[in-house]
Image 1 (spheres, rainbow, N blue to C red):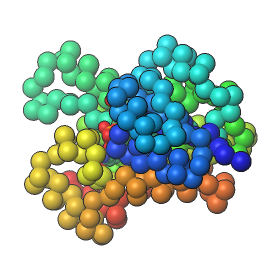
Image 2 (cartoon, rainbow, N blue to C red; image 1 turned 90 degrees about the horizontal axis):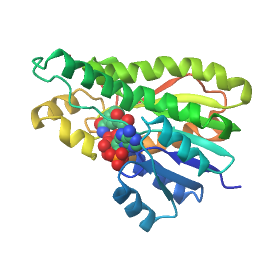
Image 3 (cartoon, rainbow, N blue to C red; image 1 turned 180 degrees about the vertical axis):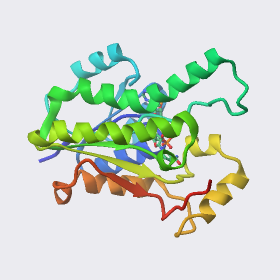
Image 4 (cartoon, rainbow, N blue to C red; image 1 turned 90 degrees about the vertical axis):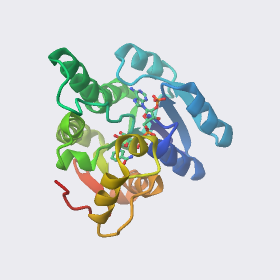
Length: 239
Ligand code: NDP
């Protein structure tokens, strides 16, 4: 029987690859994001169902759940990104607070709100999978802090969902270059340094992440919960 999979931020990059993977397996896939254009483009190529939602907005999430089927088997909290943050350390305190909170909202609070909003839809035998980041182990200011917080909060989520036979895990990508996110954030020099610090000597691809998510959502992974699966080519610390 086909499962229902919800991929947040599924219109681009890693989320798009995850949505495509499940759609290719004939699962029922719903993708969300704030820009209808990217969602509609994917829907035109696949059978995914696009729904516009800002996952930092509780009201928008309450509207989203009214459009969902009763049962969601797999929730992939992928929406997020690194909000430009105090790069030169010279922003005033109000701007610092705004940007710090924006990263927590985008990556940590959005995943918690989404999981909470979908609580009654999450089905036994299902899985919640968050997209974390190698940044959680490498600093990276408020972005890294938001992804580290995601992994810590997930421990409580795993305890809460375990009795309902629902797993909760984090997939933590390394450097996935074929995304808007990576292109916008790093200089060519920094990119080369990061790739040189991997065992595989190559950046990851969105498909690498989709494969790990598919495994954690599969019957083979039913006794894996509360974990962080690093998918980073054996990346070593570069700071
Ligand atoms: P993208 O920018 O391509 O994807 C992010 C997606 O999230 C977009 O489709 C965006 O769509 C959506 N999104 C962002 N904020 C919201 C929101 N508030 N509500 C709804 N949708 C939102 O980059 P990636 O594919 O690289 O990023 C996917 C995830 O992977 C992120 O969580 C990122 O932190 C993580 N990651 C990426 C790495 C990389 O190297 N690329 C490394 C480690 C982690 P829209 O703007 O239309 O809302």
